Amino acid sequence: MRYRWLTAFPILYAAAFAAVAWALLGSDVLEPFVRGQLLLVRVLAIVGCFAAVSAFERGDHLRTAWLALAAATVLVLVRDLVRLGAPDATMADPLGLGLSALGVLSNVALLTGVWLLARAWRVAAIDLPGGRGGVAATAIVAAVLALAVAGPFAWRHLQSVLAGDGSALILLVSAVVDILALCLLAPLFLTAVGLRGGLFAWPWALITASMFSWLLYDAAAGIGSGVVAQGFPLPDVFRGLAENFLFAAGLAQRFAVNRVRRSAG
Amino acid sequence: MPSISEQVSERLAPYLGPFNAEVWVKTVSERKLGRPVEHLTAADVTALLDGLRPSLNTFMGRTAAGELLQQIGREVR
Image (cartoon, rainbow over all chains, first blue to last red; front, side, top):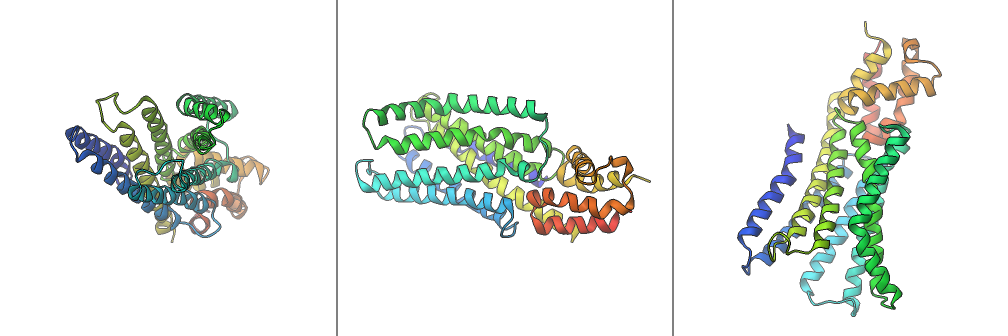
């Protein structure tokens, strides 16, 4: 029951956020509301990551993975907080460049964490469901989705860099890291499927949901915020979903490890 | 009485899922002990659990995996 609530929480939160944002459309309160909830979901994600870290010992493979995910979220929270104090910073000034660098570092840490999670099945020397064919097919689907969603950003930024705009390099790196991280959806998903019926499927399923939500975030950011209604913060709905699924995954990881220790101890 | 592999799989299933638990036990038996699961005896339990340890360490951490394997080692006959 506890795990079902963890799964429901990000969805209920996203629905509540969307409803309030809808009610606030056109109001001056909408922007501070969106900013406030952004900080809240970042903090929740950090709490979830450190809950998972605390379930493991130094040297455990998944401890390193969760530490990297925690670092990614801390870095992006710091960027958001600094940006609150300097909303006009642009890539032309050192502060703006520093903020972009924090964003890239956060993306690299996220990629590292997701990569470590995605290769857990290799470290454990187990087979993923579906055999090699199934793994390859799922990986191709994930790669196509990732390229379709984040590829256009990467292409646009690559053209800017080639045209001599050095400041677009950071955005290009960020877009490429996004694509790579989204490609790792396949092994995460298959690991969750392999563990189905067991407690340890929950953290993997929730991490997969988090990464899928980032894919939706990229798609929503690409199509602009005016699709649902002018000014409706659709990307923020999916960003909250992604961060809250990460929060839920971290807690699920800790609960699952604790359950083993309680039953076996 | 359930076989050795069935007893071990049953105890892993709540955590890894029934399908995965069975596959892991089968894989360790064939790859590390060099025989099919049907031929496992009580004398193989320690080696079987040692073979499962690296995979369990990865997914649950060394402490939880160690405690679970100890418990299984006590219960499986």
